[in-house]
Image 1 (tube, rainbow, N blue to C red):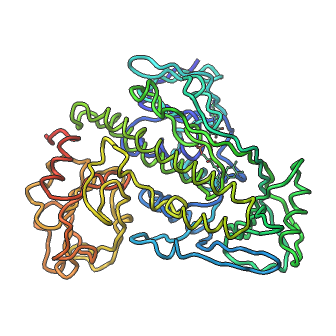
Image 2: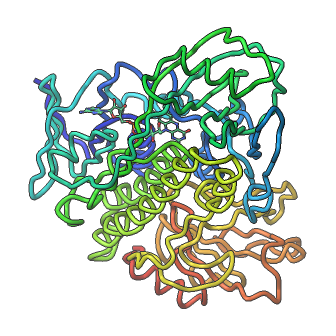
Length: 510
Ligand SMILES: Cc1cc2nc3c(=O)[nH]c(=O)nc-3n(C[C@H](O)[C@H](O)[C@H](O)COP(=O)(O)OP(=O)(O)OC[C@H]3O[C@@H](n4cnc5c(N)ncnc54)[C@H](O)[C@@H]3O)c2cc1C
Protein backbone atom coordinates (compact mmCIF):
# COMPACT_ATOMS: atom_id res chain seq x y z
CA UNK A 1 0.00 0.00 0.00
CA UNK A 2 1.38 3.38 -1.05
CA UNK A 3 1.06 6.15 1.56
CA UNK A 4 2.29 9.67 0.88
CA UNK A 5 1.98 13.23 2.17
CA UNK A 6 1.56 16.37 0.06
CA UNK A 7 0.40 19.93 0.64
CA UNK A 8 -2.45 19.61 -1.84
CA UNK A 9 -4.35 16.59 -3.11
CA UNK A 10 -6.56 17.14 -6.14
CA UNK A 11 -9.34 14.66 -6.89
CA UNK A 12 -10.07 14.78 -10.63
CA UNK A 13 -7.68 15.80 -13.37
CA UNK A 14 -10.02 17.57 -15.78
CA UNK A 15 -9.08 21.12 -16.78
CA UNK A 16 -10.08 22.60 -13.40
CA UNK A 17 -8.04 20.18 -11.31
CA UNK A 18 -5.04 20.29 -13.64
CA UNK A 19 -4.81 24.09 -13.71
CA UNK A 20 -5.40 24.48 -9.96
CA UNK A 21 -2.66 21.96 -9.21
CA UNK A 22 -0.25 23.54 -11.68
CA UNK A 23 -0.71 27.01 -10.20
CA UNK A 24 -0.33 25.86 -6.59
CA UNK A 25 2.78 23.91 -7.61
CA UNK A 26 4.25 26.97 -9.32
CA UNK A 27 3.93 28.77 -5.98
CA UNK A 28 5.88 26.09 -4.18
CA UNK A 29 3.20 23.71 -2.86
CA UNK A 30 3.70 19.97 -3.28
CA UNK A 31 0.69 18.62 -5.20
CA UNK A 32 -0.74 15.33 -6.39
CA UNK A 33 -3.65 14.95 -8.81
CA UNK A 34 -5.51 11.64 -8.76
CA UNK A 35 -7.47 10.97 -11.97
CA UNK A 36 -9.68 8.04 -12.95
CA UNK A 37 -9.02 8.26 -16.69
CA UNK A 38 -5.95 6.48 -18.07
CA UNK A 39 -4.76 9.66 -19.82
CA UNK A 40 -5.86 13.25 -20.49
CA UNK A 41 -9.04 13.70 -22.54
CA UNK A 42 -8.53 12.68 -26.17
CA UNK A 43 -11.79 13.75 -27.86
CA UNK A 44 -14.76 16.07 -27.56
CA UNK A 45 -16.23 18.21 -24.78
CA UNK A 46 -15.63 21.98 -24.65
CA UNK A 47 -14.62 23.86 -27.73
CA UNK A 48 -13.85 27.51 -26.96
CA UNK A 49 -11.68 29.69 -24.74
CA UNK A 50 -13.13 33.12 -24.06
CA UNK A 51 -11.16 36.37 -23.72
CA UNK A 52 -10.63 36.00 -19.98
CA UNK A 53 -9.43 32.40 -20.26
CA UNK A 54 -6.91 33.51 -22.87
CA UNK A 55 -5.66 36.23 -20.51
CA UNK A 56 -5.43 33.69 -17.69
CA UNK A 57 -3.51 31.20 -19.81
CA UNK A 58 -1.20 33.95 -21.04
CA UNK A 59 -0.17 34.73 -17.46
CA UNK A 60 0.29 30.99 -16.86
CA UNK A 61 2.51 30.85 -19.96
CA UNK A 62 0.73 28.27 -22.14
CA UNK A 63 -1.36 30.52 -24.38
CA UNK A 64 1.13 30.69 -27.24
CA UNK A 65 0.90 26.93 -27.78
CA UNK A 66 -2.89 27.15 -27.86
CA UNK A 67 -2.93 30.16 -30.20
CA UNK A 68 -0.75 28.22 -32.62
CA UNK A 69 -3.37 25.47 -32.85
CA UNK A 70 -6.71 27.26 -32.35
CA UNK A 71 -9.03 29.28 -34.58
CA UNK A 72 -10.09 32.84 -33.75
CA UNK A 73 -13.81 33.55 -33.90
CA UNK A 74 -15.68 36.69 -32.86
CA UNK A 75 -18.90 36.55 -34.89
CA UNK A 76 -22.35 35.13 -34.17
CA UNK A 77 -24.55 34.70 -37.23
CA UNK A 78 -28.08 33.60 -37.94
CA UNK A 79 -28.91 31.46 -40.98
CA UNK A 80 -32.64 31.31 -41.68
CA UNK A 81 -34.67 30.40 -44.75
CA UNK A 82 -31.64 29.62 -46.86
CA UNK A 83 -29.60 32.75 -46.13
CA UNK A 84 -27.61 34.62 -43.49
CA UNK A 85 -29.94 37.12 -41.84
CA UNK A 86 -27.61 38.55 -39.18
CA UNK A 87 -23.90 38.72 -38.37
CA UNK A 88 -22.73 40.39 -35.18
CA UNK A 89 -19.44 40.78 -33.36
CA UNK A 90 -19.49 44.22 -31.78
CA UNK A 91 -19.48 42.90 -28.20
CA UNK A 92 -16.08 41.41 -28.93
CA UNK A 93 -14.75 44.33 -30.98
CA UNK A 94 -15.79 46.87 -28.36
CA UNK A 95 -13.98 45.18 -25.48
CA UNK A 96 -11.69 47.69 -23.81
CA UNK A 97 -8.19 47.04 -22.48
CA UNK A 98 -8.27 43.44 -23.68
CA UNK A 99 -5.87 41.96 -26.19
CA UNK A 100 -7.67 38.77 -27.27
CA UNK A 101 -11.02 40.08 -28.54
CA UNK A 102 -12.39 36.76 -29.71
CA UNK A 103 -13.12 33.18 -28.76
CA UNK A 104 -10.21 30.86 -29.43
CA UNK A 105 -11.90 27.76 -30.82
CA UNK A 106 -9.91 24.77 -29.63
CA UNK A 107 -10.75 21.37 -28.23
CA UNK A 108 -10.67 20.73 -24.49
CA UNK A 109 -8.37 17.72 -25.10
CA UNK A 110 -5.59 20.04 -26.30
CA UNK A 111 -5.97 22.21 -23.20
CA UNK A 112 -5.93 19.19 -20.87
CA UNK A 113 -2.96 17.59 -22.60
CA UNK A 114 -0.87 20.78 -22.29
CA UNK A 115 -1.75 21.21 -18.63
CA UNK A 116 -1.04 17.54 -17.85
CA UNK A 117 2.34 17.77 -19.59
CA UNK A 118 3.21 20.87 -17.54
CA UNK A 119 2.30 19.02 -14.33
CA UNK A 120 4.60 16.10 -15.13
CA UNK A 121 4.72 13.44 -12.43
CA UNK A 122 2.36 15.37 -10.13
CA UNK A 123 -0.58 13.58 -11.75
CA UNK A 124 -1.43 9.90 -11.43
CA UNK A 125 -3.81 8.48 -14.06
CA UNK A 126 -5.98 5.36 -13.67
CA UNK A 127 -6.27 6.22 -9.98
CA UNK A 128 -9.95 6.63 -9.01
CA UNK A 129 -10.49 8.02 -5.54
CA UNK A 130 -12.82 6.07 -3.30
CA UNK A 131 -13.13 8.34 -0.26
CA UNK A 132 -11.99 11.52 1.41
CA UNK A 133 -11.89 12.15 5.16
CA UNK A 134 -11.38 15.58 6.64
CA UNK A 135 -9.51 15.75 9.95
CA UNK A 136 -8.66 18.71 12.16
CA UNK A 137 -5.30 19.12 10.44
CA UNK A 138 -5.90 17.99 6.88
CA UNK A 139 -7.54 15.55 4.50
CA UNK A 140 -6.95 11.85 3.94
CA UNK A 141 -7.66 10.79 0.37
CA UNK A 142 -7.98 7.07 -0.35
CA UNK A 143 -7.86 5.64 -3.86
CA UNK A 144 -9.51 2.39 -4.99
CA UNK A 145 -6.00 0.97 -5.44
CA UNK A 146 -5.34 1.44 -1.70
CA UNK A 147 -3.07 4.47 -2.15
CA UNK A 148 -3.53 6.92 0.75
CA UNK A 149 -2.63 10.57 0.34
CA UNK A 150 -2.43 12.80 3.42
CA UNK A 151 -2.79 16.44 2.47
CA UNK A 152 -3.25 19.81 4.14
CA UNK A 153 -5.90 20.85 1.60
CA UNK A 154 -7.88 18.93 -0.99
CA UNK A 155 -9.54 20.22 -4.16
CA UNK A 156 -12.61 18.36 -5.36
CA UNK A 157 -12.56 18.90 -9.12
CA UNK A 158 -14.16 15.55 -9.86
CA UNK A 159 -16.86 16.79 -12.20
CA UNK A 160 -20.61 17.24 -12.03
CA UNK A 161 -21.27 13.92 -10.29
CA UNK A 162 -18.57 14.70 -7.72
CA UNK A 163 -18.11 11.83 -5.29
CA UNK A 164 -16.40 14.24 -2.89
CA UNK A 165 -19.28 16.72 -2.88
CA UNK A 166 -21.73 13.89 -2.29
CA UNK A 167 -19.70 12.31 0.48
CA UNK A 168 -19.51 15.69 2.25
CA UNK A 169 -23.29 15.97 1.94
CA UNK A 170 -23.07 19.41 0.33
CA UNK A 171 -26.43 20.10 -1.34
CA UNK A 172 -26.26 20.60 -5.13
CA UNK A 173 -29.56 22.17 -5.98
CA UNK A 174 -31.28 23.69 -8.99
CA UNK A 175 -33.40 22.64 -11.92
CA UNK A 176 -33.34 20.17 -14.79
CA UNK A 177 -35.13 21.54 -17.84
CA UNK A 178 -35.48 18.13 -19.54
CA UNK A 179 -33.38 19.02 -22.58
CA UNK A 180 -30.72 16.73 -23.95
CA UNK A 181 -28.49 17.93 -26.75
CA UNK A 182 -26.64 15.88 -29.30
CA UNK A 183 -23.06 16.99 -29.92
CA UNK A 184 -21.21 16.02 -33.08
CA UNK A 185 -17.56 16.64 -34.00
CA UNK A 186 -17.13 15.82 -37.67
CA UNK A 187 -15.59 16.68 -41.01
CA UNK A 188 -17.91 17.56 -43.86
CA UNK A 189 -17.94 18.05 -47.60
CA UNK A 190 -20.39 20.88 -48.31
CA UNK A 191 -21.08 23.86 -50.55
CA UNK A 192 -22.17 25.81 -47.46
CA UNK A 193 -19.85 28.86 -47.19
CA UNK A 194 -17.07 28.09 -44.66
CA UNK A 195 -16.83 31.05 -42.30
CA UNK A 196 -15.14 31.33 -38.88
CA UNK A 197 -18.49 32.17 -37.26
CA UNK A 198 -20.78 30.61 -34.69
CA UNK A 199 -23.89 30.03 -36.76
CA UNK A 200 -27.35 29.62 -35.21
CA UNK A 201 -29.66 27.89 -37.69
CA UNK A 202 -33.31 28.84 -37.55
CA UNK A 203 -36.00 26.52 -38.88
CA UNK A 204 -39.73 26.67 -38.20
CA UNK A 205 -39.23 29.49 -35.69
CA UNK A 206 -36.74 27.54 -33.54
CA UNK A 207 -32.94 27.48 -33.31
CA UNK A 208 -32.14 23.82 -32.77
CA UNK A 209 -28.83 23.55 -34.59
CA UNK A 210 -25.63 25.51 -34.01
CA UNK A 211 -22.39 25.14 -35.95
CA UNK A 212 -19.16 25.98 -34.14
CA UNK A 213 -16.05 26.35 -36.32
CA UNK A 214 -12.98 24.56 -35.00
CA UNK A 215 -9.28 23.99 -35.47
CA UNK A 216 -8.21 21.50 -38.18
CA UNK A 217 -11.37 22.31 -40.20
CA UNK A 218 -13.29 20.24 -37.68
CA UNK A 219 -17.01 21.11 -37.38
CA UNK A 220 -18.79 21.03 -34.03
CA UNK A 221 -22.58 20.83 -34.22
CA UNK A 222 -25.03 21.08 -31.31
CA UNK A 223 -28.43 19.59 -32.18
CA UNK A 224 -31.66 19.59 -30.17
CA UNK A 225 -33.87 16.68 -31.25
CA UNK A 226 -37.26 15.40 -30.25
CA UNK A 227 -37.55 11.79 -29.08
CA UNK A 228 -34.68 9.36 -29.37
CA UNK A 229 -31.25 10.91 -29.90
CA UNK A 230 -29.08 9.20 -32.49
CA UNK A 231 -26.15 10.19 -34.69
CA UNK A 232 -28.24 9.46 -37.79
CA UNK A 233 -31.10 11.73 -36.69
CA UNK A 234 -28.59 14.44 -35.75
CA UNK A 235 -27.03 14.37 -39.20
CA UNK A 236 -30.47 14.49 -40.85
CA UNK A 237 -31.36 17.54 -38.76
CA UNK A 238 -28.10 19.28 -39.74
CA UNK A 239 -28.85 18.62 -43.42
CA UNK A 240 -32.34 20.08 -43.05
CA UNK A 241 -31.05 23.20 -41.30
CA UNK A 242 -28.20 23.84 -43.79
CA UNK A 243 -30.50 23.47 -46.84
CA UNK A 244 -30.50 24.43 -49.63
CA UNK A 245 -26.80 23.67 -49.27
CA UNK A 246 -25.50 20.17 -49.74
CA UNK A 247 -23.75 18.40 -46.81
CA UNK A 248 -21.92 15.05 -46.80
CA UNK A 249 -20.41 13.77 -43.55
CA UNK A 250 -16.95 12.47 -44.40
CA UNK A 251 -15.78 11.52 -40.89
CA UNK A 252 -17.26 11.49 -37.40
CA UNK A 253 -14.64 12.18 -34.75
CA UNK A 254 -16.94 12.22 -31.70
CA UNK A 255 -20.66 11.92 -31.05
CA UNK A 256 -22.19 12.40 -27.61
CA UNK A 257 -25.15 13.78 -25.73
CA UNK A 258 -25.35 16.48 -23.11
CA UNK A 259 -28.21 16.49 -20.62
CA UNK A 260 -28.84 20.00 -19.29
CA UNK A 261 -28.75 20.35 -15.51
CA UNK A 262 -28.57 23.65 -13.65
CA UNK A 263 -27.14 23.17 -10.21
CA UNK A 264 -25.04 25.08 -7.66
CA UNK A 265 -23.28 23.70 -4.58
CA UNK A 266 -24.46 25.25 -1.34
CA UNK A 267 -20.88 25.98 -0.31
CA UNK A 268 -17.59 25.67 -2.22
CA UNK A 269 -15.57 25.17 0.98
CA UNK A 270 -16.31 22.31 3.38
CA UNK A 271 -17.53 22.94 6.93
CA UNK A 272 -19.41 26.02 5.77
CA UNK A 273 -16.25 27.78 4.55
CA UNK A 274 -14.06 26.76 7.49
CA UNK A 275 -12.81 23.50 6.06
CA UNK A 276 -9.98 22.12 3.97
CA UNK A 277 -11.86 20.62 1.03
CA UNK A 278 -12.67 23.02 -1.78
CA UNK A 279 -15.05 22.34 -4.65
CA UNK A 280 -14.23 23.81 -8.07
CA UNK A 281 -15.36 23.49 -11.68
CA UNK A 282 -18.26 21.23 -12.60
CA UNK A 283 -18.15 19.69 -9.10
CA UNK A 284 -19.35 23.07 -7.80
CA UNK A 285 -21.65 24.22 -10.60
CA UNK A 286 -23.42 22.66 -13.58
CA UNK A 287 -25.22 24.32 -16.47
CA UNK A 288 -25.87 24.04 -20.19
CA UNK A 289 -23.02 24.50 -22.64
CA UNK A 290 -24.73 27.44 -24.37
CA UNK A 291 -22.46 30.46 -24.28
CA UNK A 292 -19.45 28.17 -23.86
CA UNK A 293 -19.07 28.84 -20.17
CA UNK A 294 -18.29 25.40 -18.65
CA UNK A 295 -14.60 25.04 -19.36
CA UNK A 296 -14.12 28.80 -19.06
CA UNK A 297 -15.77 28.99 -15.64
CA UNK A 298 -13.70 26.01 -14.46
CA UNK A 299 -10.48 27.69 -15.61
CA UNK A 300 -11.48 30.91 -13.84
CA UNK A 301 -12.19 28.92 -10.67
CA UNK A 302 -8.68 27.50 -10.96
CA UNK A 303 -7.10 30.88 -11.56
CA UNK A 304 -8.89 32.14 -8.47
CA UNK A 305 -8.02 29.09 -6.39
CA UNK A 306 -4.46 28.15 -7.43
CA UNK A 307 -2.79 31.22 -5.95
CA UNK A 308 -4.97 31.13 -2.84
CA UNK A 309 -3.84 27.58 -2.10
CA UNK A 310 -0.24 28.39 -3.01
CA UNK A 311 -0.27 31.27 -0.53
CA UNK A 312 -1.85 29.42 2.40
CA UNK A 313 0.22 26.27 1.82
CA UNK A 314 3.65 27.46 0.76
CA UNK A 315 3.71 31.04 2.08
CA UNK A 316 1.69 30.95 5.29
CA UNK A 317 4.58 32.53 7.23
CA UNK A 318 4.43 35.60 5.03
CA UNK A 319 0.74 36.22 5.79
CA UNK A 320 -0.87 38.14 8.62
CA UNK A 321 -2.79 36.09 11.24
CA UNK A 322 -6.29 35.50 9.87
CA UNK A 323 -5.31 36.33 6.29
CA UNK A 324 -5.30 32.66 5.23
CA UNK A 325 -8.92 32.25 6.31
CA UNK A 326 -9.94 35.43 4.47
CA UNK A 327 -8.16 34.28 1.33
CA UNK A 328 -9.89 30.88 1.24
CA UNK A 329 -13.32 32.13 2.32
CA UNK A 330 -13.22 34.79 -0.40
CA UNK A 331 -12.99 32.04 -3.02
CA UNK A 332 -16.43 30.88 -1.93
CA UNK A 333 -17.78 34.42 -1.71
CA UNK A 334 -16.61 35.38 -5.17
CA UNK A 335 -16.83 32.25 -7.25
CA UNK A 336 -20.13 30.91 -5.90
CA UNK A 337 -21.92 34.16 -6.74
CA UNK A 338 -20.33 34.27 -10.17
CA UNK A 339 -21.29 30.63 -10.78
CA UNK A 340 -24.90 31.46 -9.89
CA UNK A 341 -24.88 34.15 -12.57
CA UNK A 342 -23.24 31.83 -15.10
CA UNK A 343 -26.01 29.30 -14.51
CA UNK A 344 -28.68 31.99 -15.08
CA UNK A 345 -27.08 33.15 -18.34
CA UNK A 346 -26.72 29.61 -19.70
CA UNK A 347 -30.31 28.82 -18.61
CA UNK A 348 -31.62 31.82 -20.55
CA UNK A 349 -29.69 30.82 -23.66
CA UNK A 350 -30.59 27.15 -23.68
CA UNK A 351 -34.29 27.99 -23.46
CA UNK A 352 -33.89 30.51 -26.30
CA UNK A 353 -33.03 27.68 -28.66
CA UNK A 354 -36.75 27.02 -28.81
CA UNK A 355 -37.25 30.51 -30.23
CA UNK A 356 -36.05 32.39 -33.30
CA UNK A 357 -32.35 32.99 -33.89
CA UNK A 358 -32.77 36.72 -33.29
CA UNK A 359 -33.81 36.06 -29.70
CA UNK A 360 -30.88 33.69 -29.13
CA UNK A 361 -28.23 36.00 -30.57
CA UNK A 362 -29.88 38.97 -28.86
CA UNK A 363 -29.36 37.26 -25.53
CA UNK A 364 -25.77 36.36 -26.39
CA UNK A 365 -25.26 40.10 -26.92
CA UNK A 366 -27.08 40.99 -23.71
CA UNK A 367 -24.95 38.61 -21.66
CA UNK A 368 -21.68 39.32 -23.46
CA UNK A 369 -20.03 40.21 -20.13
CA UNK A 370 -20.23 36.54 -19.15
CA UNK A 371 -19.69 35.05 -22.59
CA UNK A 372 -16.48 36.99 -23.22
CA UNK A 373 -15.61 36.53 -19.53
CA UNK A 374 -14.48 40.15 -19.36
CA UNK A 375 -17.48 41.55 -17.51
CA UNK A 376 -17.23 39.17 -14.58
CA UNK A 377 -16.64 41.32 -11.53
CA UNK A 378 -16.14 40.66 -7.84
CA UNK A 379 -17.24 44.17 -6.99
CA UNK A 380 -20.34 44.38 -4.84
CA UNK A 381 -20.08 40.75 -3.68
CA UNK A 382 -18.74 41.57 -0.21
CA UNK A 383 -15.53 39.74 -0.95
CA UNK A 384 -13.13 39.59 1.97
CA UNK A 385 -10.24 40.64 -0.30
CA UNK A 386 -11.84 43.29 -2.49
CA UNK A 387 -11.85 46.71 -0.90
CA UNK A 388 -14.55 48.62 -2.75
CA UNK A 389 -12.73 51.58 -4.31
CA UNK A 390 -11.69 53.13 -7.62
CA UNK A 391 -13.62 53.74 -10.79
CA UNK A 392 -13.68 52.76 -14.45
CA UNK A 393 -10.90 50.45 -15.58
CA UNK A 394 -9.37 50.59 -12.11
CA UNK A 395 -12.51 49.74 -10.15
CA UNK A 396 -11.68 47.26 -7.39
CA UNK A 397 -13.22 43.86 -8.10
CA UNK A 398 -12.86 44.23 -11.88
CA UNK A 399 -10.35 42.36 -14.03
CA UNK A 400 -7.14 44.37 -14.23
CA UNK A 401 -6.90 46.13 -17.60
CA UNK A 402 -4.32 44.85 -20.06
CA UNK A 403 -2.33 47.68 -21.59
CA UNK A 404 0.84 48.39 -23.56
CA UNK A 405 4.08 49.09 -21.71
CA UNK A 406 7.67 49.90 -22.43
CA UNK A 407 10.36 49.18 -19.89
CA UNK A 408 12.96 51.78 -18.95
CA UNK A 409 15.90 51.48 -21.32
CA UNK A 410 14.07 49.03 -23.64
CA UNK A 411 12.04 50.20 -26.63
CA UNK A 412 10.37 46.80 -27.26
CA UNK A 413 6.62 47.18 -26.58
CA UNK A 414 5.07 44.69 -24.15
CA UNK A 415 1.70 44.21 -22.50
CA UNK A 416 1.02 43.94 -18.80
CA UNK A 417 -0.44 40.42 -18.99
CA UNK A 418 2.50 39.10 -20.98
CA UNK A 419 5.04 40.75 -18.65
CA UNK A 420 4.00 39.98 -15.08
CA UNK A 421 5.30 37.03 -13.08
CA UNK A 422 2.57 34.53 -12.20
CA UNK A 423 1.56 34.37 -8.57
CA UNK A 424 2.47 37.83 -7.29
CA UNK A 425 0.35 40.70 -6.11
CA UNK A 426 1.15 43.79 -8.18
CA UNK A 427 1.60 47.09 -6.38
CA UNK A 428 1.16 49.64 -9.16
CA UNK A 429 1.98 53.26 -8.41
CA UNK A 430 2.07 56.31 -10.64
CA UNK A 431 4.77 58.41 -9.10
CA UNK A 432 7.31 57.70 -6.43
CA UNK A 433 7.30 54.18 -5.02
CA UNK A 434 10.79 54.24 -3.44
CA UNK A 435 9.58 54.13 0.17
CA UNK A 436 7.58 50.97 -0.41
CA UNK A 437 9.84 48.83 -2.56
CA UNK A 438 10.40 45.43 -1.00
CA UNK A 439 8.18 46.26 1.96
CA UNK A 440 5.96 43.21 1.45
CA UNK A 441 8.56 40.67 0.39
CA UNK A 442 8.85 38.59 -2.73
CA UNK A 443 5.15 37.92 -3.20
CA UNK A 444 4.49 41.53 -4.13
CA UNK A 445 5.93 43.00 -7.34
CA UNK A 446 6.39 46.76 -7.08
CA UNK A 447 5.75 48.53 -10.36
CA UNK A 448 6.12 52.22 -11.04
CA UNK A 449 4.00 53.40 -13.98
CA UNK A 450 4.92 56.62 -15.72
CA UNK A 451 3.33 58.29 -18.74
CA UNK A 452 5.08 56.97 -21.82
CA UNK A 453 6.68 60.29 -22.68
CA UNK A 454 8.48 60.22 -19.32
CA UNK A 455 10.03 56.76 -19.65
CA UNK A 456 13.15 57.90 -21.52
CA UNK A 457 14.42 59.91 -18.60
CA UNK A 458 13.50 57.26 -16.05
CA UNK A 459 16.06 54.75 -14.87
CA UNK A 460 13.88 53.42 -12.14
CA UNK A 461 16.45 54.51 -9.60
CA UNK A 462 15.13 51.89 -7.20
CA UNK A 463 14.29 48.22 -7.26
CA UNK A 464 10.77 48.66 -8.62
CA UNK A 465 10.06 47.73 -12.20
CA UNK A 466 9.43 50.92 -14.15
CA UNK A 467 7.19 50.99 -17.19
CA UNK A 468 6.04 53.78 -19.47
CA UNK A 469 2.48 53.55 -20.74
CA UNK A 470 -0.18 55.62 -22.44
CA UNK A 471 -2.64 54.05 -20.02
CA UNK A 472 -1.68 56.54 -17.32
CA UNK A 473 -1.37 60.28 -17.87
CA UNK A 474 0.06 63.11 -15.82
CA UNK A 475 -3.39 64.53 -15.22
CA UNK A 476 -5.58 61.43 -14.79
CA UNK A 477 -6.99 60.28 -11.47
CA UNK A 478 -5.02 57.03 -11.21
CA UNK A 479 -2.57 57.02 -8.30
CA UNK A 480 -2.13 53.46 -7.05
CA UNK A 481 -3.70 50.01 -7.32
CA UNK A 482 -3.16 46.54 -5.94
CA UNK A 483 -3.76 43.71 -8.41
CA UNK A 484 -4.16 40.19 -7.03
CA UNK A 485 -2.41 37.17 -8.57
CA UNK A 486 -5.63 36.30 -10.41
CA UNK A 487 -5.32 39.69 -12.09
CA UNK A 488 -8.34 41.21 -10.37
CA UNK A 489 -8.00 44.67 -8.87
CA UNK A 490 -8.14 44.34 -5.05
CA UNK A 491 -7.82 48.02 -4.27
CA UNK A 492 -7.48 51.26 -6.23
CA UNK A 493 -6.96 54.73 -4.75
CA UNK A 494 -4.18 56.35 -2.77
CA UNK A 495 -0.71 54.96 -2.09
CA UNK A 496 -1.48 54.87 1.64
CA UNK A 497 -4.71 52.96 0.93
CA UNK A 498 -2.85 50.43 -1.20
CA UNK A 499 -0.21 49.98 1.51
CA UNK A 500 -2.95 49.44 4.10
CA UNK A 501 -4.66 46.85 1.87
CA UNK A 502 -1.39 44.93 1.56
CA UNK A 503 -0.58 45.29 5.29
CA UNK A 504 -3.82 43.49 6.12
CA UNK A 505 -2.69 40.47 4.12
CA UNK A 506 1.09 40.40 4.43
CA UNK A 507 3.33 40.34 7.47
CA UNK A 508 6.18 42.87 7.09
CA UNK A 509 9.06 41.42 5.07
CA UNK A 510 12.05 40.36 7.17
C1 LIG B 1 -20.55 17.67 -24.92
C2 LIG B 1 -19.97 18.74 -24.10
C3 LIG B 1 -19.73 19.96 -24.69
C4 LIG B 1 -19.23 20.98 -23.93
N1 LIG B 1 -19.00 22.18 -24.54
C5 LIG B 1 -18.47 23.19 -23.82
C6 LIG B 1 -18.13 24.43 -24.41
O1 LIG B 1 -18.34 24.63 -25.60
N2 LIG B 1 -17.57 25.38 -23.66
C7 LIG B 1 -17.32 25.20 -22.34
O2 LIG B 1 -16.78 26.11 -21.70
N3 LIG B 1 -17.65 24.04 -21.73
C8 LIG B 1 -18.21 23.04 -22.44
N4 LIG B 1 -18.50 21.84 -21.83
C9 LIG B 1 -18.32 21.72 -20.41
C10 LIG B 1 -16.89 21.40 -20.04
O3 LIG B 1 -16.45 20.26 -20.72
C11 LIG B 1 -16.83 21.20 -18.55
O4 LIG B 1 -17.45 22.30 -17.92
C12 LIG B 1 -15.39 21.06 -18.08
O5 LIG B 1 -14.85 19.84 -18.50
C13 LIG B 1 -15.32 21.14 -16.56
O6 LIG B 1 -14.05 20.79 -16.15
P1 LIG B 1 -13.80 20.12 -14.73
O7 LIG B 1 -12.35 19.86 -14.66
O8 LIG B 1 -14.45 20.94 -13.69
O9 LIG B 1 -14.63 18.76 -14.77
P2 LIG B 1 -14.40 17.51 -15.72
O10 LIG B 1 -13.84 17.91 -17.03
O11 LIG B 1 -15.66 16.75 -15.71
O12 LIG B 1 -13.27 16.70 -14.99
C14 LIG B 1 -13.51 15.93 -13.85
C15 LIG B 1 -12.46 14.85 -13.82
O13 LIG B 1 -12.56 14.16 -12.60
C16 LIG B 1 -12.35 12.79 -12.85
N5 LIG B 1 -12.98 12.04 -11.75
C17 LIG B 1 -14.29 11.93 -11.46
N6 LIG B 1 -14.46 11.21 -10.34
C18 LIG B 1 -13.23 10.88 -9.91
C19 LIG B 1 -12.75 10.13 -8.80
N7 LIG B 1 -13.59 9.58 -7.90
N8 LIG B 1 -11.42 9.95 -8.66
C20 LIG B 1 -10.55 10.50 -9.56
N9 LIG B 1 -10.95 11.20 -10.64
C21 LIG B 1 -12.27 11.39 -10.80
C22 LIG B 1 -12.98 12.55 -14.20
O14 LIG B 1 -12.44 11.41 -14.83
C23 LIG B 1 -12.65 13.84 -14.93
O15 LIG B 1 -11.45 13.74 -15.66
C24 LIG B 1 -18.97 20.78 -22.56
C25 LIG B 1 -19.20 19.56 -21.98
C26 LIG B 1 -19.68 18.54 -22.73
C27 LIG B 1 -19.93 17.20 -22.09
